[in-house]
Length: 254
Ligand code: PGA
Image 1 (cartoon, rainbow, N blue to C red):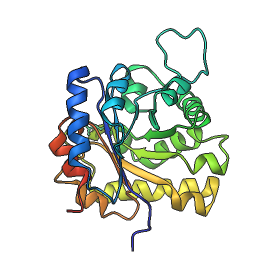
Image 2 (cartoon, rainbow, N blue to C red):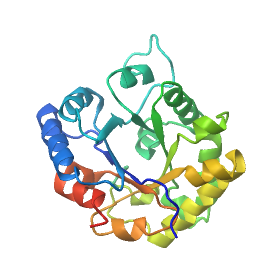
Image 3 (cartoon, protein in one colour):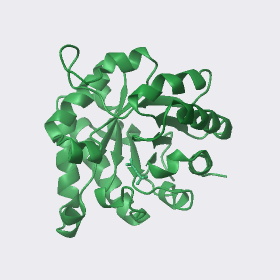
């Protein structure tokens, strides 16, 4: 029997679109997922599009958030966006440690830890991304890599804060490549990560923790992924840019 964790399906819109596009997509997503009672739904537009999406989603159960956040509270940090700013415009979630940030902006585990703590401090739910590169998988380092990422990012949290984190396992080789991890590959890592969190914060926090899978999630593979006991939802990139495919993923039980 699969434990009763409420799934979360989150769309990462990355650096796509503009204001008109975002308004249309958000409206369509709200409309097409309105009957989804079995899971939480969230979308993450680029920063300037968030207020546009917020307006459209007013009164809808679809949550929204950002794709990144500053590790600093406030001050002279040109170009950065604070957790408080995000919270003040209605964001509930924020992605931290996405592999594209790690890759293109050289974000390391320690920075990801500071962002995670900052998000939690402002009342945001961090969607904390971890995942191995292809070379690491081929070298048999998948589990040690994701363990290090989680241990460092969650360092210093107390149990109550740890329980609010959403983990996202996103193998780098599966992102935007059309190459999804098999359900068995995903489950192996998810089960392992839950064990790591159990070791750090105890049984209850680990059992309640939501661990999303991300990496080429599509309408035709979501069901098998969601059937895995430790897969509690998905972080969707490419397929979240189309209202029809995203809503099919959300409505995977139908
Ligand atoms: P993808 O992206 O679904 O396009 O592979 C996932 C992600 O980057 O979160």
